[in-house]
Length: 73
Image 1 (tube, rainbow, N blue to C red):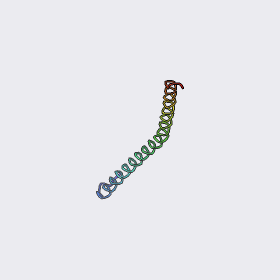
Image 2: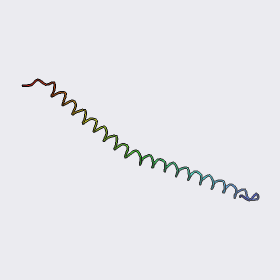
Image 3: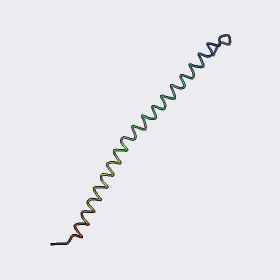
Image 4: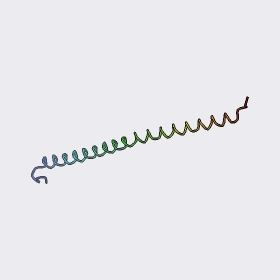
């Protein structure tokens, strides 16, 4: 702990503790952001794939209905 006879040392220790705490908080925040980013990318790809499949299926249904309703020659 700080020496009671050296207030400068106590201030230095306090600043050191605050700096370490801020650094750890920033590292934790960056780690969380990186984790979220690494989860969002595959999730986004999966959503695009699902939407593409749904749109393809809807187009096929539309084509089938259109050809069924079209007048025969």
